[in-house]
Length: 245
Image (cartoon, rainbow, N blue to C red; front, side):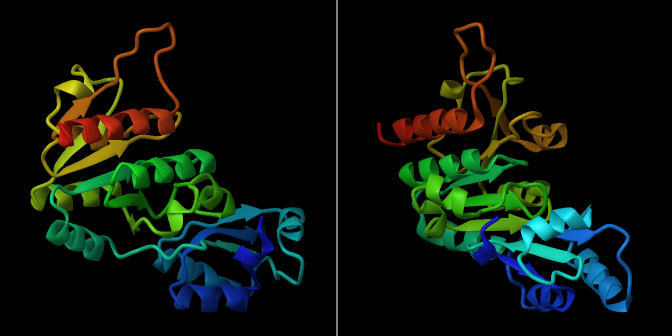
């Protein structure tokens, strides 16, 4: 873990959370107690931050100092307000394009997706507050720096974003191998939000039910699926093709 992107110590973590800094991961020592430690745990729950409880040996490796049983990773990127980003895009973009990422956990995949998104004119990326890959130095490098310029917003649940976007006149398209139609059959010339699912499970079934359309990539070989960053690139460039013809 990059030492410039961590905070350690119970009081330091409390102050970091209260300052609304973008925290991507919290590690707490198993079996730790004390009033201040309990205050930290309550603050984490209040802010919907799920800590990982680990042995002290793990914390010793993460922090080069007196961690007091608490270490957090901070994102070098300040996440935007979801509603503010959406409203700004709807007001300024000719044909808005949003990308919703449902539990993408691999940092390099995340970085590659951000890079492709910037190249294809995605206006904003939406990710869940928990369960998603962190935007760390690896993600920023893989994104070729796009993570520092492309608006990225967090929501408690991707479903909330879907409801909000649909109510704002944006069609929601789920990229899934479970679809019956190919992506070439979807009209992407409309304001669109594309959902990409996690590397192992794909898009959650509850999200698939909410989508206006589901679409898949035609697979002509023996392997039935692509890496999520590659699949995302194929979808985004089909959107580019449709909008530029």
